[in-house]
Image (cartoon, rainbow, N blue to C red; front, side):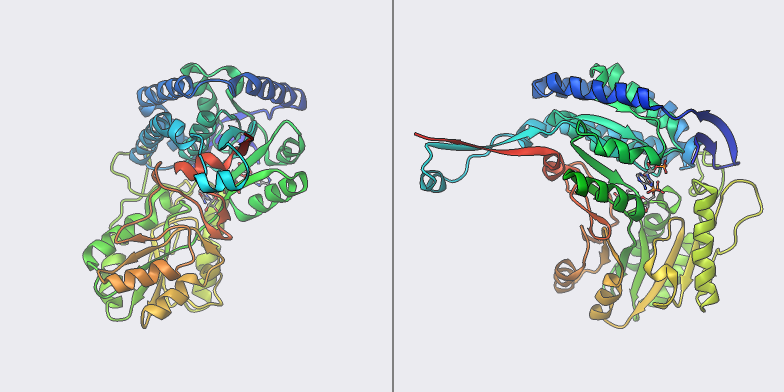
Length: 461
Ligand code: NAP
């Protein structure tokens, strides 16, 4: 894939970049390692000050970086600004909380004396340079939710961003430098995915995190497995959105639309499979389809656009294939389902019903504004359908019945359960998946500890 900015709203190539060669990669790896040796000794208060400065600069740059993101991957401009604001918030959150999250822990007195020690502490020490392989769909947020905790923990970051968002990738390196982080603390490697393996095998790189597709995750995890290096994987999702009879149907249907089409439908935590109790199925389906049909699709730079183009021509072709496969196998197309005639990689909000297990869309991730509707006879069937997926990222349930809530929380195979609301990440809550959606957690105390050497310090009398 070329490293280039190609505007998905019209297919125009705006800027191309040469991939960095071996010498430049070597220079940057050396710099990362050398920087880590001193940066790891810095104080939390100083790291936090730099991170807050980065947040302030990001707030100042918000309009400009939002335009860059929208140009590179097509998200509606208002959502791009919101993404930048969310990144600044997460930076401030980690600047404020990292020291407490990584404070030494003291085991229980009885266990300390049982071990023969006078004192035992658990200390969280940084690991070293961490490679982050990142996707284009939230081109700022995915990187910041890695970078903010990594930098606060005393690690240094190397970013291999998706090839279609090079300007955002370069902006991030520049942002951290302007904030005052020394050059080697955060570096962008302009490289294709073929260069990742060699970097992972380099002893100077101590760990890796990948957000992206299953094949990319498998490849990075395989190499890191061979090299015995820690990984965090945030992969795809096909989140269920279950609606039970006691739900507020108007609200459930309204939020369902946003949950499906946010970021032009290209979000790992978008609700993708809508599983509705038979008693309210028709009422929900009518409202949901109306809501999907009413969305304004068009130029993502326009303030009132709700759904822009897909990020790539291939992405649209993949989505079309999933819809066509379902249609051929008997799915009903309740709205959408045909690409528009105008230029750019647009695809309309689409709702499919009558999904069977034989259809590819039942098991694969639909990365675009396409929803599937399922009818469930009761709670048990709703849970069965929800869990009948290789993925387990997040899940959404709508019910006012406490017993039902408890059942969903107990039984849904996912990294989170959102009750009467849609999934959204927050710096203070752990984020990550089960099954093929990956492993490890980002955000919160769990996220910052992923790339730490958890060190037991035992002292004799
Ligand atoms: P992708 O094709 O896997 O790309 C993600 C990153 O991995 C890019 O930087 C890509 O580089 C790189 N890459 C691809 N193949 C690789 C390989 N074999 N070895 C090493 N690196 C490789 O995914 P995408 O299309 O950008 O993103 C969409 C996917 O990400 C969806 O499945 C979505 O659900 C998932 N996602 C998950 C989360 C989460 O938190 N769980 C969040 C967002 C997105 P190139 O661009 O150079 O190919």
